[in-house]
Image (cartoon, rainbow, N blue to C red; front, side, top):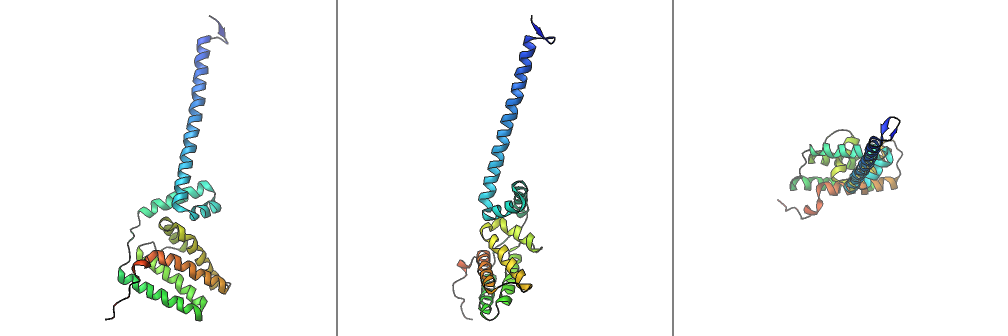
Length: 196
């Protein structure tokens, strides 16, 4: 029997086979992890849409995906409910008055719209925390309009500092309307209210 460094040939073959098996396992493991990451990325991108892109741009992919997964888990513990028809009509009337007020005082109307959207969110069961916490919660159920909600809120903050133009305020009202309409689902509230 031939030996090499004191080991017989069959021992070297066994060591080489074990080394190849470890390399193959590492490659397979890497492929499985990559596929898992790709599935996670696809799932989160599909679920959050533009909010996924915004969060990735802000935090990088790995941290963004952790954040979005955490949002989804936290959202599962929030008990949301639809507004009653009476609540919906009340908020719709407030919204109509807020929009009409825009003509006379755009800045004040945007502040009212911000307050009204916050009120509707709380009435639906979203947490009453700071804006970022609210927006993160909203992003799970309304990923397409949360980007507009964020932009409108930024314009409202600029407005409070006296830095918002009339065009920015007009855009903010349109953006607030998008989230407002989605929150109260105005399609079911447009029938006229009967006079008492």
